[in-house]
Image (cartoon, rainbow, N blue to C red):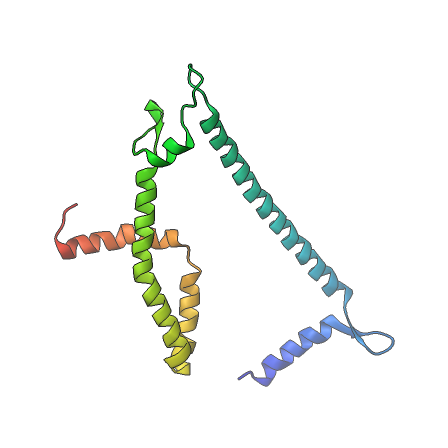
Length: 176
């Protein structure tokens, strides 16, 4: 519960930002309006920079990919075709072999195994929190889960490879 002092401070801040027009209706003070407008333009600029950065990445990757697939050997044949790229198993850039089939297979297999674990756990936790957990448990776990959801998965992977791998190797007795 908020104390009267906290409520009074909030009221003072609001009262400073609002003044009355001649007809008695509240309006925002010029300084507050200027600050809001300034912040709005800064955020707009950040959004535009983000959009152009994403477009730039897509353009560079697309241009380099087209260059790879349009390069011809001395006989006029493409060095790498899309079919070879997706179906061959050898990745040797020095030998001009660019097959990504093993990479695709391992990515799909890893994603499938991760979903086998994460889907039941995630759905179970969500159903428990929304339907069965007490209000106290919800108030405790919800912010924790929201913070954990905001951490990039790369950070979890780095944690697993640097901390969990040695721990599990010690538990299972492996030296590799």
